[in-house]
Amino acid sequence: MDHNEAPLLDALDRYHRLDRYGFTPPAHRQGRGADPRVRDILGADTFRADVLASGGLDDRSSSGGYLKKAEQLMADAVGAETSFFSTCGSSLSVKAAVLAVAAGKGDLLVSRDAHKSITAGLVFSGIQPRWIRPRWDSKLHLAHPPSAADVEEMWERYPDAAGALIVSPTPYGTCADIAAIAKICHDRGKPLIVDEAWGAHLPFHEGLPTWAMSAGADVCVVSVHKMGAGFEQGSVYHLQGDLVDPAHLSECADLLMTTSPNVILYSAMDGWRRQMVQHGAELLGSALDLARRLRRDIDALPGIHVLEDEAPRRRVLPRPGPPADPHGSVRARHQRLPGGRLAAGKQPPGHGPQRPPPHHGNPVHGRRRRLRPAAPGRAAGPDRSSPRASCPGAG
Image: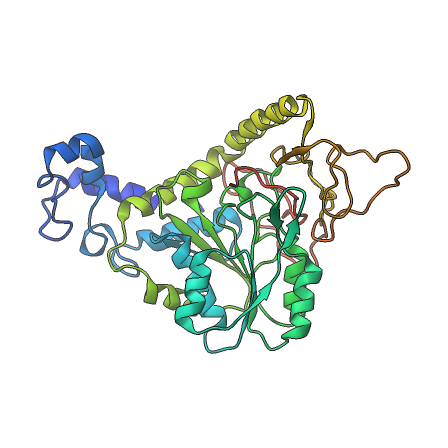
């Protein structure tokens, strides 16, 4: 596909060139009816870009087809089979995923560190959650994602559950072993939803942790406004495999979403996808270099140490790429990490090597993803399959 295109953004530009006067909402008439004091602060271009989707620029499911084309380009850019845009945030996207997977089908295994939107979806859908306990880090006083063993234990207790949902990256910046968890779910013929709201950037640089689709998740929800150049409430939810029907997922989202989607949000997500395909590796590479230097400087301060990436570098296929993710948490020097490892990367006298935590670092199992042709501006390469212990930017 041609990733030089930005169908929604380009359509908005053409719409402006027509210089039409609309007789439909929004009633500010592209700023003509807005208070000048408001225009002075928000900007005239904000009002110009706020046009009606249906009957104006496009519609959620009809009209010019710009939205559908933009979603297809997004899916192609990140290697998903299907992608959907949401202008109601990942709060809507994850509710739609919960409904599509479990409504009327049984209980749902849910990581207890779930966002309030997931809890809200459970409440109004009547789905019974079966809570998976996250791993509490008593040293850092934060929660890590559940391990694959934790998820498997819950499946043994609730074998009739409709699916599972985990959060990765967590708001603290740690990532789950999605590949191992996905395998456990798929061995039972059940789908895995990953709330990856803090991971929209992960597909666009080889030095970042594996993103959910590459690790085998069935549905993945990302917030473009959190880790991308999107406006607040911009979200994308991705789908692959045959365990969740894309039409059913879309219908569930349609029940929840507004009938007046914001074209500004749509267009920003469309433009961000083009930017990341063309320049994402360079931009993220620069950010990683800056973070690497910051980690080094912090690590040089007396008495503190930056938590290192705990994940073994195992992948389905060998590939070049930068070393460990340079972001992470700061903790006291020589405190033990979960699973017995030391933050400083060395054992004190009298202690042998410790095993890494069980929730990091397994290669992809089960379903294998095919290699997708590289989009223009991206290097071809195999899917990444090894999760990392920390994710940049979360928090």
